[in-house]
Each structure stands twice: as structure tokens, then as C-alpha cells.
Length: 312
Image (cartoon, rainbow, N blue to C red; front, top):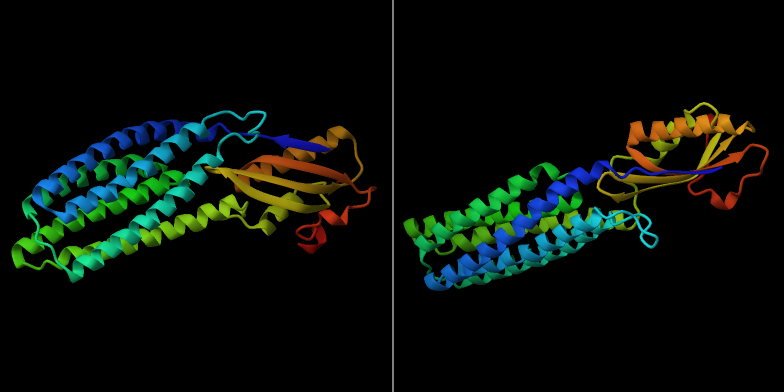
């Protein structure tokens, strides 16, 4: 017996709401970049121009995330049988690379500025940085509740980093105005860059793990096997594979050995297995193949090793 179960509905509400938020965020960020570049040029402020360029990296980040969210809402097709749920994971991977590159550029620029301080117009820096802080803060708050989605979390971290960058510009401008310490802006910039780089590394690690069909977070393969074996009638489970399709959408395939029985009895076992997986691990997309005790097992399929009731 070979059975499938599919559930995709719970993710659509989050994606539909986040899509609208990200669309508005793209427009707000483009406006902010224009304001920072123009005002930075007028005030001869390298800090504002560099922050405008830094915020410019948000535009492809937000646009890719927005596009990925829209794709994720599409239903499966004959060619994309799982739908487009992985679009968000792929977007997170690409965005994390952009984050890392932006952080390295910011650190490099800050080191150069530390060696060669630049005199800037602090008043213009403060006004524009406050405006940028309000915009980036609004975007961060708007996507805060959707952080469980890796793609949305990338946007959240990126804009959170922008907020600290804006705060750094404000603090640096005030220190320069009060003490003449031109190096303050550079030191803050290095700290912000290191923070963003650390965050990008975490997203790259997690999104790469998902793209390589790794086991979902907070799930242990042995626990999944134990839950299946706890279902009455199950004798052995092997060839277990668990992976992530998209936001909180996990899939499983496995082979389960059961006694010889009537079809309607095996259907009850299948239903109980599905309910256990959905309840304990939120695994709602399952492909379970039954094998009868009277048929010899195919040892080529035993990856990982088969788990029997007596071994638990």
C-alpha cells in the first residue's frame, strides 16, 4: 500500500498578509534611498551616502522576498508538483548572501573612515537618520510576527540591522558634534557590520540545510520512528526521510512493516500514523508505503537502519 497526504492551507494566510507588507516596504525603501543619496550629497556626508547605498541593498532583498511570497501562493502544477514553497527558502539563501556582502562592504568602508576621518554636516545626518529609523522601524514591526518564516526573518533581520545603522549614525553625529570625535561613526559602523554578518551566516546555514533536504529543526529522526512504532499494528519502520518543503510545511516518506490483514484494517493504521505525525511533529505531507510480514524486506531501502519495536 502506498498512500499520500497533502496539506498546504495554513501557510497561505501568513503569505498573503506578508506579501502586501513586503510590497509596500519595497516602495518605502526606494523613497528612503533617494532621500538619503540626495541629502547626503547636499550635506557632503559620506555616512548618509553610504547608508543610502546600504539601504539600496534592501531593495533587491525585499523585492526577491515579495516575489517569493507571491510564488509560494501558487498551487502545484504538473511540472512543480510541490508548488513554489521552496521559492521563499531560495530567496532567503540569496538574500543572506546579499546581507553578508553588504556587511563586508560596510566594515571595509568603516575601517577606511577610521583611518581617514571625514568632516560631515551633522544636522543633516541626524534629520535623515531619524527619518530612515522611522521607515526601517515600521518595516521591522510590520514583519515581526512572521519571523517563523525563514524568508520573512531575513527581511526582519536586514531591516533590524538598518535600524541599528540609523541609530549608529545619530549617535555618531551627536558625538562628533559634542566632542569632535570623527572616529565614532566608523567604530559604530564596524559593530553594525559584524552584527549583520553574524545574522547572515545563521540564515545561510539554515536555508542551506533546508535546500539540502536536511532534517527540520526541533525534529529527531528517532523520535519520529518511535511515534510511528507506537501505533498499534506497526512492527517495523525503515527508509525514513523527513524534510522541509516551505514555511512550517514538513514532508515525510517511509516504509512501514505490518502484519497480514484486511485492507480496511491497514487503513486504520495509516490514519493513526498520520494523526500521530501531524500532532507530534506537524508533519502533514506524508508518503507511507506498507510492507506485509509475509514479504521479505528489501535491505537496499534500509537507510537509516530499520527500527523495530523490540529495539525501543
